[in-house]
Image 1 (tube, one colour):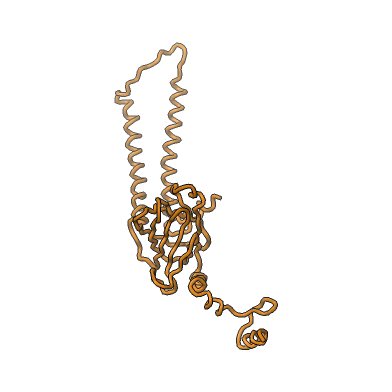
Image 2: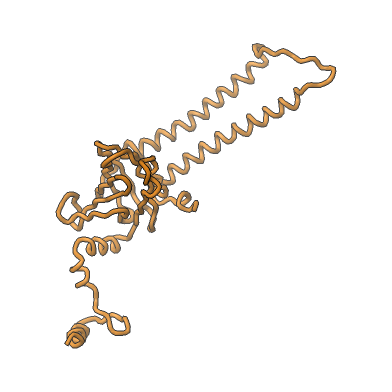
Length: 253
């Protein structure tokens, strides 16, 4: 179950993972230190027989340093988190690398539908491929996506890509990704969008260029794809060449 969150299948997945690790390490360090000091103070200055309670204002110079020094250290840690966070945000959300292909992602209650260019590589032409619940992309190709919603607010999320972007009705939002690993990965809607929200799932299939070209051929011209499939013999083997053609013709007679 956790595999889809551990597997990084896009080029910027590692950048986001490293940022999360940085935040976890810095915040975790201060959490453990603060809780350790807290319990040490509770134990050391607990009520004791024969020792009257002290009233400490915290205004003494030798005490204020225990507030000021950690305060400045925490600010430095905040800067150490803020700088890489801004860099990751800019590289993923603000900067758009040149697109090798553009696809359209449409959210609606309660399904994802996709439109991607056919063999001509141009969107909104006659050979476009339209699918529901399944998006086919090519390994190591930079994609721009045009995200929109037909009804309410949805959120297009691919955990293995570390990709999440809200889809707003009436707006087209552009983002990008570059798949870096072959496989099939979950698509989720992470915005409560109605009674069928939990059923609004899909998948993105990352293929080799050859496999993607074959899928495009099957999707745009099924008859051509079947014509290019070599005939098979009775035992399931392929029959090649002119001899194979004559055998198929003989079998038809």
